[in-house]
Length: 213
View 1: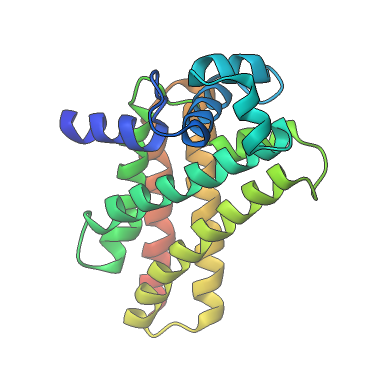
View 2: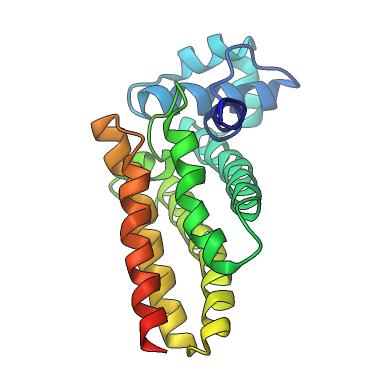
């Protein structure tokens, strides 16, 4: 468990203290780390530039604005977080039911990491008022991507029970709410076991579907 928790901390949160790579990559790493830990509005460009170890001129060379940098940093995080979550889910079992429930075990490892600060995309959406803002768009696309992955697992589960696509789609939406709910409760309460509570509720959903067949 300690090894898995360490991996989750490094992969899901990854607040790099010493950015590496080219100037653009270092700016992205610094922006992601600082914004995830402290928020968008509380993080200035000067702090990002300083953290990245680049010149301020590099910021203007690669990004037209702070918002553009934040959106790009979130896109970078989305790719890495989804790869981590998908891989972790598939390690939890060979059946759809085991993988669906295993999602909450993956989250619990993340919650136990020292630099867990909730969902970066929910956090960002909460700071940006306009639904059309590029930052909100990235956050929305992340949730759509997460829902799409959950739906693949729900479809596999539904196929085993010979359920129709409508039930599978509804289960996927309910699952996303449980996942995001666990993340939010873990952030506010500081209790990693919020994932276990959500897992228990998720199991009730699956058991109810099993009983209908």
